[in-house]
Amino acid sequence: MLKKLEKKYSLLDHQLYLLHEILKTNRKLLLFMIMEAICTVITPYVSMYIPKLGVDFVAQKEDIHRTILVIGSFTAIMIVSQALGNMASRGKTMLLNAVRNFYREKLFCTTLDCEYSHVESPEWQDKYEEAKQMSVDWGPWSATTLMLSGMIKLFASIFSFFLYGHIIVSLNLWILVLLIVISAFNFYAMRRAQLHEQSRIDERSQLQRRRSNMLSYASDSRMGKDVRLYDMSGWILQIFNYYRELHYRLRKDVQQHYSYAAFVEAATLFIRDGISYCYLIWATVNGRISLGNFVLISSAIACFSSLITQVSQSFGLMMQAVPPLDRMRAYLDKTDTPEPESAVEIPKRGDGIEIIFQNVTFYYNPGKLILDHLNLTISNGEKLALVGVNGAGKSTLVKLLCGLYHPVEGRILINGTNIRQYKKEDLYSIIAPVFQDAAIFPFTVAENVSLKVIKDTNREKVIKCLNTVGLLKEVEGFEKGIDQMMLHITQKDGAILSGGQLQKLFMARALYKDTPIMIFDEPTASLDPIAESETYEQFDRLSSEKTTIYISHRLASTRFCDRIVLLEDGRVIANGSHKDLLKNCESYAQMYHLQSLYYHKNKEEVV
Ligand SMILES: Nc1ncnc2c1ncn2[C@@H]1O[C@H](COP(=O)(O)OP(=O)(O)OP(=O)(O)O)[C@@H](O)[C@H]1O
Picture 1 (cartoon, rainbow, N blue to C red):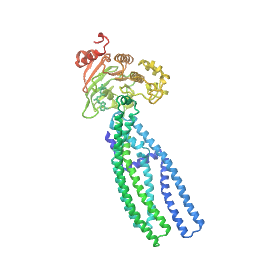
Picture 2: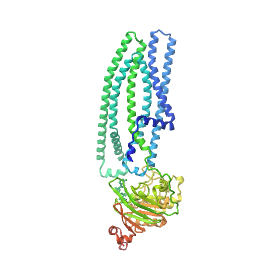
Picture 3: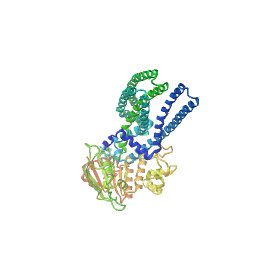
Picture 4: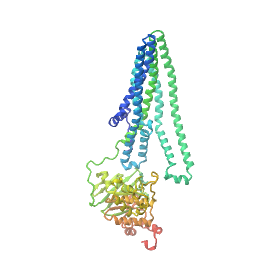
């Protein structure tokens, strides 16, 4: 899957890709780009002729009116071209910003929609950050901008090459050949420096990411407590300075290569200009060319030389944009598992639900088996508890059921159909999970329960769900009740809930969704054992007809379930009611009695 992110495209392929997108979404930009390129060619070309004409007219004692008219016209053309060029350049800069925003949004939407396994994959996240930062987040140095700006310069340079070349050939073809050969040396030296910079670009972006991560620690509330209480600021600063030093050394090394290129350029400039100007002076003194042409050709030689530098710079910038664009496009290419071609209809309300895990094997990384040929059937309306030590695979099992990951072997069936035969959204629509690490969004309390925009939120239902989980009283205490914004980090008056209250809110969310399958993956860990037990039993009463999976480490809280499944090493090692397991499963009984010693309020509570 990650191999797809390594896909490589050619420079031309990227250029055509960007042009194609611009043609579809941003034609004005294409117009500005063409206009800027044309003006970039015309302005210096016309301005080069003005001194030549001036010298020619003076030498030929031309009529003053004609002189003014001709030179005035050339000057006017130059000014208009310059103005149009500036206008096009400003428009282009604004629209290049729009291009970056367009791709930023595309990357964002791809990430919002991609398979969940990607979201949990650090490699994938890294690739996303890389693609985003280098392609759109670096302003004018972003790959999308570098490529498009480079194209304008290259286009203008190719045209100018023929125009200036034509002027120089009128002096001597060999001077043009000399200029090209010597410029080729420059080009080579510059390319070497650019290739060296490219070879270190991954290292540079990694360092920049690490540095910006370190910077974010200063304002990250999750880290703020530990940073202060464990006196970590000196340590963090030390690491930050270490990255800064590495970054500085890297930049110095890259700069050194550019310095060699600059030295080659200076040396070749001396030889190139020395030979061309000597020949030019010789030709002028011997009457082979006029004084006006001397002025024109000397300007053409100077422009030709800077043209070569410009070509190598634009080429280098475009080449620099290739790897980030490779990553951006590979990221944007659909890498998700395709939806089934002919999806099966999802069970309707009232159809009943039966879940079967059939020989399910799963691992995140080959070599560490998480579920090992697991078989489990959950019948309609059953209340099932999944228990087991940390890392036994309980959360993984429910992630598989939700379709967030897929079994490596075996199948999961809902009402006899492999869940991969259902459309993703359809499957999601029949499951209401509450995970340990659920998130609060910077919306109102009501929206955080319904997870819908306020106009589509059923306020009565929100209030009912909050009441059921025992959170209504707290919410009514907020100034704006269920319309109070949440997250005080992003909202000045954002509501702050305690860990336990947040978990109640997540449960209200699942109740609001009102689906035939409910999953509670330790959402009550922040509640005290008695509150957890009471909450679960209340849920049981409310969701009597639903198929429900409870995950908990507190065995007393799941006693009420129809069946308890004990997971160990990715397999079901015991399976039965609380009483059965106490009688027949030694490890369950041992765990239960150990916990009871801590939790029981009086002797009678321990079975
Ligand atoms: N995204 C992931 N990538 C790689 N390994 C993972 C990932 N998520 C979980 N694991 C590993 O899979 C194993 C099972 O994790 P899982 O969360 O399913 O266990 P659990 O029984 O729910 O544990 P706990 O009771 O601590 O919540 C653990 O060893 C964990 O490190």
